[in-house]
Length: 141
Image 1 (cartoon, rainbow, N blue to C red):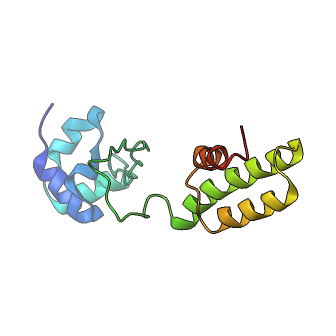
Image 2 (tube, rainbow, N blue to C red; image 1 turned 180 degrees about the horizontal axis):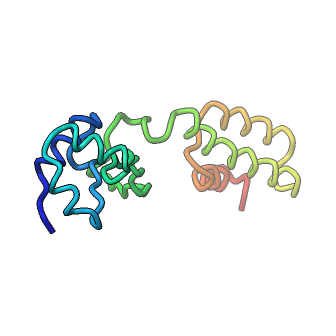
């Protein structure tokens, strides 16, 4: 197939697009070769032998979550998991555990209230921590 660079360049200027967006009809190469002037190329554009291709839309890159280990994590202490979210994640299970102990009769209402306030004060790190505290005080066996 012939290069047809001159015709492509002239058509690009006329159509006001880049040379890569100029489409030349492959079945009419002989006719395109004869077009040497801007007027000749304009006639071919009118006949739809030369066209401007549509703009290609940028396709979004495949969305995939980056696996990030502790070595590549950026941000401060609470940037990945906020303080409030962390607090909620510790307090809710503790309160649920206290309610279960109270309802099952393992602790009385007064002890429940004391422990509830200690949980609110942030005294216990986890359910296991609360359990060991209760065992050490002899509240739970």
